[in-house]
Image (tube, rainbow, N blue to C red; front, side, top):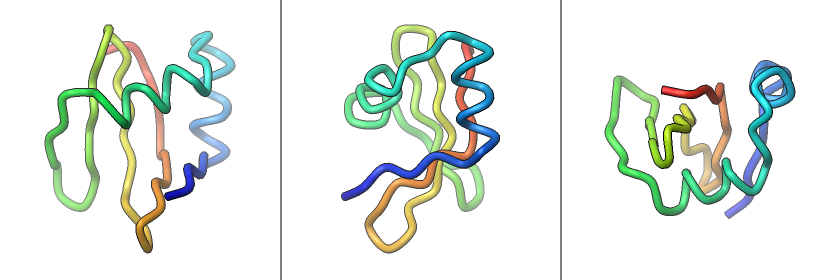
Length: 65
């Protein structure tokens, strides 16, 4: 499984000071729920919104939630 970041997610990571390692941890171990065709995962106050595309994770956005 690969992790892909949208340009929007990259911009939000930089603006909010959220590292790639934090995103990986939240996707792997966070509390998850579905909203439509997206998955939300939250852990330690960081929320990652992503889609599963051909077994890969495509991160749409990331923020403190």
